[in-house]
Image (cartoon, rainbow, N blue to C red; front, side):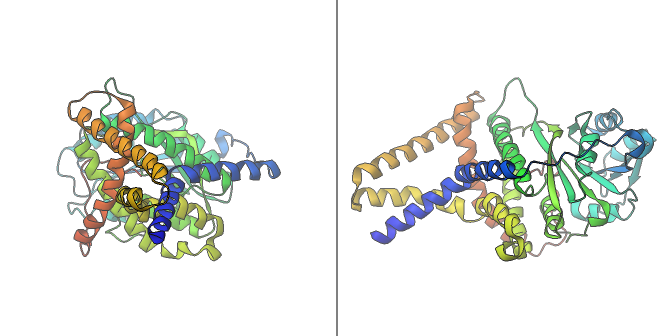
Length: 398
């Protein structure tokens, strides 16, 4: 039983560290660092010194949002003569291209063959000439100051990528998907900001991120998380990923948990794929702080932590009857059972479209971890399919 106790406590520690402990450690490290080394504040460049940039939008069958997206792009506070709007619509067979033809400000690259989003990025980037490229999704709205804030972050020559903030639009009646996702992204945004202050943010979300054009590298066309892979490869070359909370993309939450499930399973599979393709980053002697942040913030979440989380319950039951401190294990078991019951009740309420954010939190948390495990299966079934799958849901954020 001694072995089971060791496994139980190690599992409990890893689960706690992954979701709570790392945030605490990160906060303490940032405070220590900034006590001895104050952050450098770079000046905001005047209009005449602003660089040219490209707004890059990879889209598939987005006729419903084209006009809104174009208007949003034109409303951004940035000199129009220094901003190009570039759409890659490969494979689209609806009215996306027809609607874009009404906007002379847009440059459209299209081919009938659909090869997936990553292939569209690889192909489109060969036509981009500006020093900065800002990637954004067709179904997101950027805040008016987003481009200036991103460009400001690039005034630091060590920054090779800038990750914007993802926000979930407040709805009059949140479901479990949008309610839970909104809370999750608020917590994620806090961690990303602290990561950036310590050394570097750990990846970027496709809703809004930017790179220096010369640092872009073609990716394999079956890549699931192109934004994450691209940004981490830039960081592996010695640059940092700045997190810019004042540049944000707003989108609606998932319509329901079924839609959110498909998205989370795909993201989980993409995380597992990324761990393998970025395996040199697992070397702490080569990548130091970046390795520490990457393993703590991403690798654990996408690999062993979900398995250990669901292993805790049966281990707890065994130790309740065989351990040396039955009362202590009974308390922990009671807390676990309560958490699962809250998650189940949150699921029931979500099916009835009843709003209760307190119960949506445990439901969304358990839901995410179940889908990480499902991601193993998704990835194994997808193996060998080089063309990749590009979800029409348009929502591949992490």
